[in-house]
Length: 97
Image (cartoon, rainbow, N blue to C red; front, top):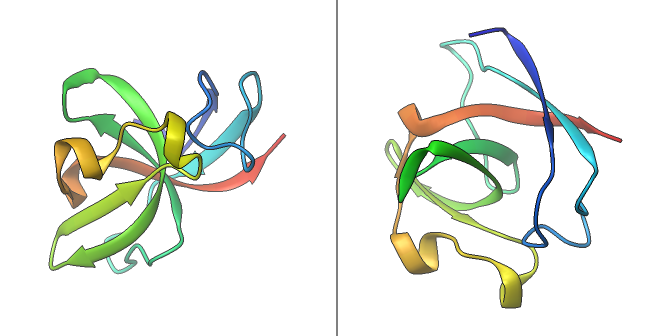
């Protein structure tokens, strides 16, 4: 995997932050870095690990993270599938266009 990846947004779950068709750039964290509440991340969808999802970290316990979409009405997130592991997070978003 590359240190920096770009992704095209599909869907409405992160509106108003990101809209369908926007691009986000995410970077892998170094081993000594951690994710924080409020970080926007790209993660493997726990329902189908071949798909990736864009969500915001809402809370965490050790290496498990609760992630949620900003658009509560249109988001399938930890409220549906539960916490995700740190290992399933692909990267932290640092730029959106």
